[in-house]
Structures are given as C-alpha cells and as structure tokens.
Length: 330
Image 1 (spheres, rainbow, N blue to C red):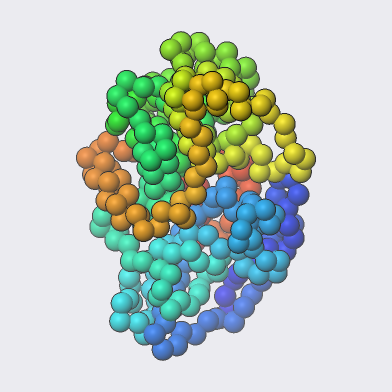
Image 2: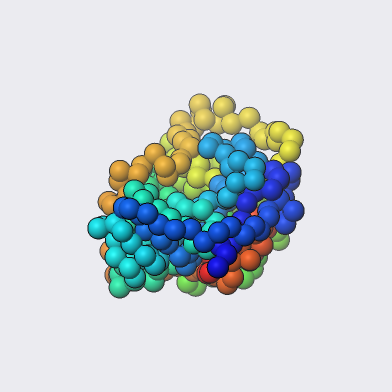
C-alpha cells in the first residue's frame, strides 16, 4: 500500500498554480515505540501558507519537502498511552494521507463537543485569531463601530460576530453580493460593502459610518485598508491579522503615508500572529465553545472532498472562492 504526499515543487510567483505542487507516492509509514499512526481526515488551507511557500514567512517550506498545515486525523494504530485507536486529534501535520507522530505535536479533539471540522475553524486557529486579535488589540466597547475586511472569510466572519456580542455596530467588507447578504443574514452584521461594486471604499465607509470607525479588523491590507483608515476616529484601534491583497505581489506596493494619521488621531496599530498566544489557547477555545453552545456564534465552511483537491482548494482560497473556512475532506 502506498502513501500519497504533496510536496512543494517550486516557489510561487504571483498567484500559485498547480505547477508549484507535486504528488508523490511513499512507502506506507510504520509506527514505533511511543508513536501513533495517523490517517488524515480534514486539512486546513489558509492564506498564511502562501508566505511559507514563497519563503517570505518563517519558517518557510523547503522545496521538494511536504507542505504542512493544521490537520484533523484519526489514530489508526497506537503505541502511545495518551492516545487510543479511534481517537481524533488536531495538529500541525504534513500533507500526507498517513503519517506517524510521537504525540507531542497533537491534541485530542472530541466529535461530541462539535463537528470535527470546527476544530480547524471556529474552535481552531481561525476562531482563536478572531477572538484574541479583537479582544486584546481591538478592545471593543459598547456602542462603537467596527469594520471588518474579508468579512465572509473564516477569521472575519467570527470577528464580526464577536464584535456584535460585545455591543458594537459591525460593518463587513466582502467581494460579492452573495457574501454581503450572508454576513448580514447569517452572521448578524449591520451592513456590508461589496468592494467590487463599490471600489471607492473611503466614500462607501463614510456613507455607512457617518460617525467614523472606532475599530478596523484588517485581514487584507492594500487600498481597502487605506479607505477604511481614512475614516478612522481618534484613538482608533487596528488589529492587523492579515494582508491577503498583497500576498501575491512581486513589487513593493505604495500606500498613503499613515504616520500623520497615526500621530494626530492617536491610533493604535498592531500586527497579530496567533503563534504568540499558544499558552492561552484553552482560554480562547473555552470562550468560543461557550458562545457556540449558546447560539451566539455561527460559522460557515467550504468543504472540498479529495486529497487530490488540496492544491486547487488552496488556490481557490486566494481567489476568494470560499465562504467561511476552506477545508479539504480526505
């Protein structure tokens, strides 16, 4: 029996394409003393992988080596007392159908608490990113106005809902009318802007937020962020969770200088990486699970089936073809 693996064949320039990936067959792995044999069930594809592929985000993926991301796997065989056959686990694992782990980088997850795929989304890194970036950096207050870019995405849709839970008026920026309707009807956003039909973001935000913007949850960067920040209020807070609009650039982009605005409006702008908060994951998961159980949080997933569909799902994510969390079911 062979084991299918996806390796990084070449570094992408601009938008990744299928030539950057290669499928290879390896011998079926065998677990040893203290190890478990895992079968991949769900694979998370995320925007940050783009930087690891190109080498701009550390640690980078090495050429001709397997790509890795967050994965839900089933324990098929175990010689580790912490894990039983039939357990499901979550971890940062390689894009392989089967692999061996010594158990240090995986954690058990329960299908009774939530669907397994939720541990890659609302109860995983994306939900935690929304929770900590908004609560720690955004510091929402009752009655404030929050604008979220990429609002129909995995992080943005959760950030907007948390903003509503904390008493904010929430506006989302999306790329289709379908997504605009979704964030209003399913996720409870107060208003939406389709940047493709309203490319003048500065004017669009000004019209919908006549009192200005107190918090901008930034997932995209670029001209969208320029337009939102032009409407920011004094003492505004800007958690920067991503810059997907620039991930495929090969030339340095020039945006309006922010320093005068930062100075005269006393702005707080802070970059955010979830890896810095690993010790607080239990706190975040507990709060997110509580809101989920209470019906205060909802989530959407775009699930693509098939190990061979992984590269296409990742490319589709960067093209905005997902609603909510993009996941591949193996």
